[in-house]
Picture 1 (cartoon, rainbow, N blue to C red):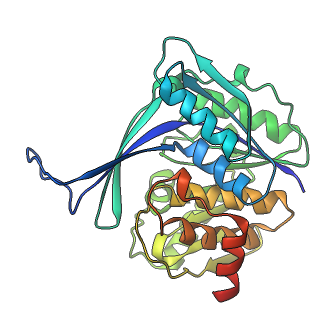
Picture 2 (picture 1 turned 60 degrees about the vertical axis):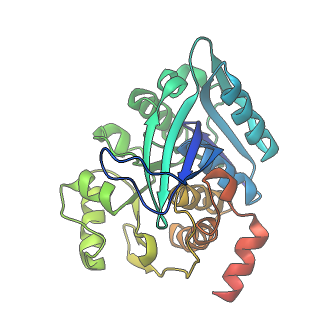
Length: 304
């Protein structure tokens, strides 16, 4: 078994649940609030670690109470936190998440995440590791880290979320790009929506492969996922779930996908497993706290 190395963001999620989202200028009473660990990097690291794969995380937090809580949560989740840096004078990242009618809207204050850079990564890439990154930390750092990992022979997974234009050299160093329909449309200049046929999603994924990515995985929410490699395009069917909160479902998919790659699975096998893990995660509130354990995913796989 290999190791998963996650480089990315850590946020404290302020989750506000209400029956609906307020209209502009409206005050809506009766909501509930929870403070939960999150951030794409943290979520993905926790997802991989809870599935039994050795996982390390590199990132930055502020010298505040939220930073202490985020570090403790990762350690309690069996994630190696030696790579976390505390940035003096900075607040830890914070995300305001509005949850209503089973969906969410998110606003992020990056805080210490904006200070993360490649010099904070002390681990040397190895061929048996899977390196994972996203776009909630500075693009320059992600570019340098992933290109170095690829050059060393490690496998690289890039979650193009939240989307920003990706340098060609970075995309060429990515073994697997993972993104949803919105990010796929932004990355390829293609009109892709939740109702677009799978054939249109496949064609857009192929455009991203032409731009340099080795394989492309498009997550389609309730419709499952699509995996496009040099040899094939495979649709991964959805898994029925009782949706409570979709926050972090994409991160769960990425973390579980990386965990299976580290265990020797193919991209298609990894996507099938990750799809089930993500279905488990949406049945609970919050992002990182909702990440399932390996036994839960195995049970759901048997009943799927």
